[in-house]
Length: 283
DNA sequence: GTAGGGTTACGC
DNA sequence: GCGTAACCCTAC
Image (cartoon, rainbow, N blue to C red; front, top):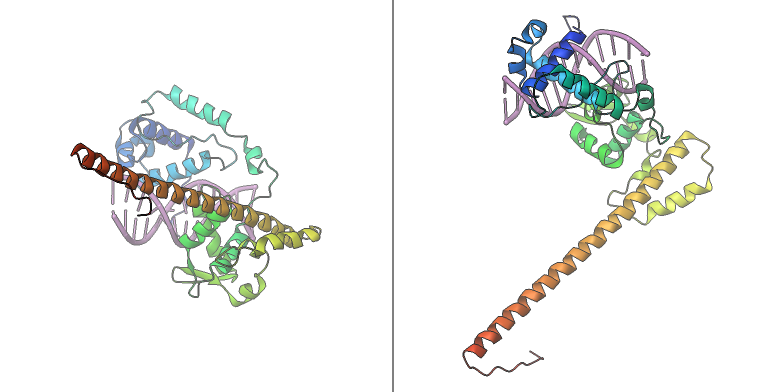
């Protein structure tokens, strides 16, 4: 709207970084007013600084744009003050720690890049809420089932809007839901990844059946991947269940021990008072 | 004043 | 079409 976008210059970025090193992230007003940086940042508001730093931080955390050195999140002024050599050092460290730009574009483990559209459609069809799902619900659903990028939360809103524009989903107030056409069209692809509350004996079967087919189509491949993930989730659920049982067992033992201790204390008490105490095992 | 979510414009 | 940067809005 209105005013054209004002791209950040490298001087401004640098001033921001130095400001964060000096005052700490979150002190945007202070940084902006600091005479050392204010000449450069005069056209930026504290909000701008915050937004820019957010972008830089997202980028530094493993993704982001192609041609710039990114700086990692610096938590507070503790990152020992001033000195631009420190900054350079930090930038160098990032360059070392983070893979080169083209390497980070493709996940190293050979996975295909995330298909957010499919994930969202999956989420909506699984959540299956009559009035639609809130963005946070969609986010949590996807986050639980898929590896997502740190900036996924922001991508999601953008993605949802586009899906709504293309009528693949519809937006009602703050809620998103599948359109009729999508609802009838989307049931299957990632469907297998839906343990929900239904009987969990199914998915393992599903993956077996899917195994009978060659992964000849992307949809099938996706379904198979999803089935594997479900199986994985299942085993984790079982593991969690086992651990719960174990915890309960230990709690019970602790309970019993406490009772025994109480009994022993009472017996000891009586003995010290010279009382004769008999134990009746059948009590 | 700041954080975080949402929106829009831009470049690939 | 997609991801990202910059901007906007709102709650705290």
